[in-house]
Length: 311
Ligand code: NAD
Image 1 (tube, rainbow, N blue to C red):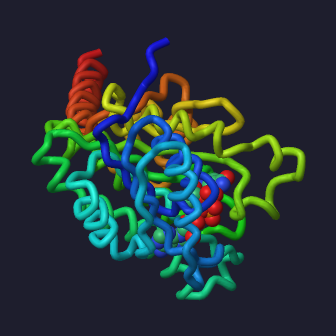
Image 2: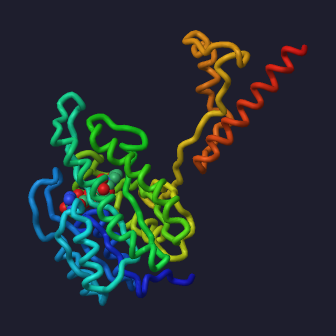
Image 3: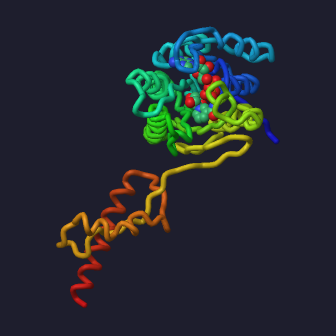
């Protein structure tokens, strides 16, 4: 099988001093990419700083690769992209991976817990991606991966701040995929589950051993390769499996019998089982489909009402 390589490409991986980001950086570095190994080196809750990134750079270089460390916070993403441009003159790939946790049940969650988690995950991805955007547009090439979580897609007790930020990243990726499409900028989302310091006290020990970040790294590396064609997809991966996830919408139903009828709370209740019936549910790929769908539904509804009044 032809080996997929990244020669000539410059990749920034945020939060790459450990866990998943380290696995991404090592893999890209081993396949020819020049890697900016960004990591602020904070504790799991976002407090403190250290030079985790140095070890990863050393490892990449020891295997014959090229890498440079960057210790900036993702909230100053422009500095991280500057490291790429100053050292290697370009930026092709950005994996927004840095993350922290400040789990608390919702009532006990402080504003600081909320703000810090949003700053690192959502604002960090916004700042870093925006700083690279101009270069991506000019060179008509860019590959971006956002990192979401099942806690965002599904919800998880004690993670209101994290869930909201992680679902925010899906929205960010969806819009950037649309804005970047004509410039060959692909923006996709990974939903990983892996052994790391974020999950060491959450996953059962035998699962923890098995859930190696190295099983997810090839999925993410493929998603940032120049041959990758999908744009705006969400890929859930763990333990050597990968799935695509997306939102679907039910077929829906008119909430009144005739156009002249009012919509009442009672008519909504009467139709509710049909509103939430997911048989025939489908994904909406473009926002214009929502409007077209609506126009079609209105037309069908009016035609049906006219037929009913003739009969
Ligand atoms: P990790 O703690 O090993 O890695 C996160 C890294 O981000 C750390 O090295 C940390 O120092 C760095 N970091 C924190 N704040 C930063 C900042 N402001 N700027 C730059 N770097 C910063 O955890 P991980 O499990 O490898 O997590 C990686 C990503 O995957 C995170 O976004 C996390 O939310 C997400 N994720 C992980 C799992 C999982 O099962 N491990 C599940 C869902 C999502």
